[in-house]
Image (tube, rainbow, N blue to C red; front, side, top):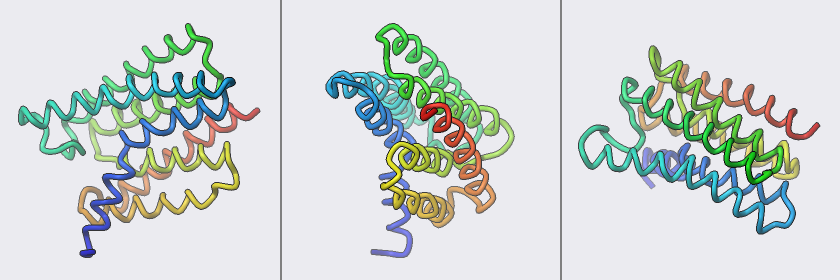
Length: 193
């Protein structure tokens, strides 16, 4: 594999929209009985908060609005982050209506917080959303399943990959990692007390 091919693969496999699709199902399934109800709850969150935003970006790429699905241009990010934040708030209302687990609501709050930070910071700087979401996801997984601590190795891998593909500077991935760690730690503390 070429010296940058691995970084492209990591950037795709652990992209924010991928983690936003997987994490709600994982956490809802782990915190809801019966299991099928948790899976359906997680799939609802995945549909609204990951599939819809990705579809909007994909259409934008096809129409030439965005360079690619990573939305590399910082100026394009605030509107997308605002949309994601709005969708997560809408989804929170749906989760309250269906009496979802508190952990699902807290994870959704974490997703909203990441989107809002991305919205605020992208107005003046290009923080790494990949690093932020990968870190937040890893911290949440370890918070709920401590034996899965090796997933924390994904954090430096994602950070290094984003620098390697020249999508971010080291400072941008460090900032994303730090924000993701702080937000996720708060979410885990709230969800597990």
